[in-house]
Length: 633
View 1: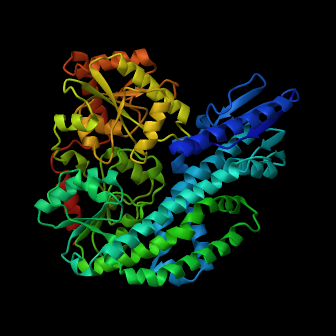
View 2: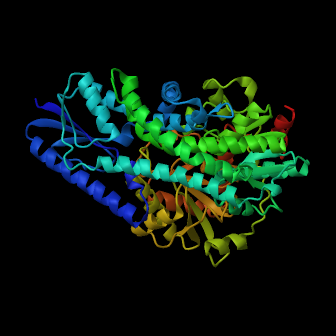
View 3: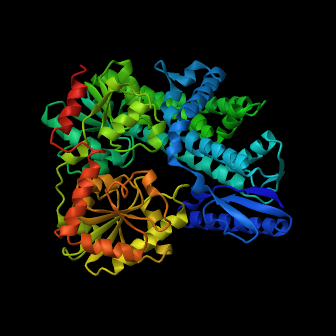
């Protein structure tokens, strides 16, 4: 019997999502070169060993001489909860080392640790980029018991494989000659540093443009607008607060947020930039010193994490340095800026309350931390009907938490969130008064005939659970099916974190020419749902929102995966499943005729399904949430 030879390769899912002409070219060359090297190695080893290859889905196609183990077959979102405690232990350890290594003046601002703004962000990265792969590769090695382990690069996955080979006394080989893994590592750090650097630049620009005499001074309820997708939750609350004479105000420092708020057609919305409360002279005085201290801290920290690796914790901590580097070089500078500006804001206006939608972005964390410091009532209004990546979050930044329904309530209790903090209020987004007409929406999308039916496809960013090739198949089945229905038009909605230009390039590359792609900056999900006849998803939470709007949902599943492990749409009656183009055509022909008996029957079943996730709207959701903030005063 041939001995087992395990080849572990990099999971290139993230590389496949690079955008732009250069990004696409690089991703294709990277994938092609990895595949060529892999085939050559298998060719030379196939006569001597039983070869097993761990690779990204469809990256290395099966050969008679080898068995391919795909990452997406092993990665499970349900594992996030089991890694939660471990990820936070690592966050505490890593930031403790940072605080020991450096002086308090740089890592503390207004008596708040600068690292606080990055705790949740880092915990999520640790879970998804490291712990999942750490346990996955350990499990595979323990199950197949290879005689040899071979890696052909220096990616996170390959470093983990070598670590376990050494730990289990398995012979290992490293053939990373002409490997380009180091380029991926460099690009990741570069793009993340650039992203934070742009936020710092935006702060400096806003601070330099603002007249101190025009600073808002009236006491307000502050709503953190850190991410445009949060506006669907915040705008109804803003409207209710305004009617109740509470002087609400959006707080942001995101470029373009003002345009996103204006898309909701609010009358003279009150909005301030956090940078308005920061003196540009203060920035000019401190910025050079902060940069110097961050470089010194990076140098000191690298010595701590890369010496004397004796156990799993120290090994994982050394791996995490790629995600830690942008935080040290740029993130901690942003922390100092946010905390100083936030402190000035609170002193100036003495807010009556703070409302946030999450606990992981700089502005929302800043407002939550300062609310505690100034003893201002605060609430996190979670729009999540289910918890995915959010199971990693601590949910400890605000006094109270509002959830949409019983499911998320029970989930947070199981994570250890105190019951006295949790309140089932429902989803405020259903109290948004839509003012966009069908004619206006169709004009935005470029649909000429008002009689055309919209079939809305919800896009997503490729990930280890649903890789790029699977996404392509999803889009192609949807496109080909809708093309067969003359009265229908396929409209694709980009994911909130997905660039429209990237999606346009992908769709064009896949030969999809008749679909329309909406713009998240100008077209709201509310409007798309209102005028759509059916929603196409894999497992998106948008499906739950569609059901609440009484829009039928179809889960396209050409790979026969268990998408219900994320949200049990199909098994619990929330949606129907289409495994191929013919299935999809059949379902769409039913749903286009919403008044048919079969369509009404399926919608009724879906309404029963949704009760577990979202409390039925009664027009009092915003009232309940606002009362939770104001009753703390």
